[in-house]
Length: 461
Image: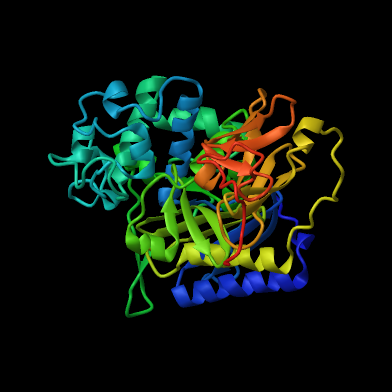
């Protein structure tokens, strides 16, 4: 893939190059590659290396560690969308006898299954997967560290179980299913479970001296669905575009939005730092910007895939060192540089082609008790409810086709919105999950629960 370097302004390109140069120098990485995708297209690629006269390009493979989990989650959501399982199913229903079968599939996707963070010794990332041929070897004799479903606790064995689930339902090995159902349709030809030329070597850099040690490259076996993959900035850029837009050959947009939605209760420290976990995707707050994606590490390699969906900008950062480069932080800053320096130019405003008069009648000012709200018709056919002033509950609503609407966000997500009319057909009030919204505060002409004092509004005598 050729990156059109003139897609960004010279000042933006220099800022991006400066940021990865600082990251490579301060992180003491043998090499670091990065790319930026905007509006679904690669617009910048950069590389820094300690080898004179040679720099890795967008086709050079690096190991991506736990970014692999996002690929595995896509496979599981495909099974759900095909009706082959439900995310609320206990694992035992589809993969019996693991000893962790009380955890549901969504628990495993969101790291709330209570499982241990790692497999039993020896350290699975630096030893061959042949040491753990069975799932029982991955889980150990005491797989649980917490009650199922009670808290977020990152678990690599949990994703090994999800890979085994994919194999059981599909009747094929995880690697083959991934190639057939995700990698090939998306054109991710340089992504796979084993390295192939050109690829970077993995290094450990001594923390107190400028010397290096090669890290072993192991086939992770059963743990592969948690962190096995190798990929390139070119392929991961294409994958990022898919995660934003969807592709009906692989996974639709609604399921990807589900993956990007927080699904795990965060610890207090996570809440403070603005971290949450969806279904195979991390969510981070960076200033006022919400970022989604995943970071990854294996001995010798660091990786991050970072997406700002609202800005339609994504960044990939890959390095071949065990530690030193905060790839998630660098990825967030690459996104910020582009999104702030060259913000998206919105499409021209255009009037709606056709509006139902019965829906247009709902637009305007409403009151829940004394709280003022505005209800607006949006260009995409939704209703948008938000406070007239200050903070408060807000949501968009999708039409159900029968005159009712369903909330899409926040407090009103999933809640029904119903228009209640008088015998003459005029609108009396809106019923939103039992809350009554009237045109005036406690409108005496509407059916307000508890009634309205007949003396009406008054001051202090």
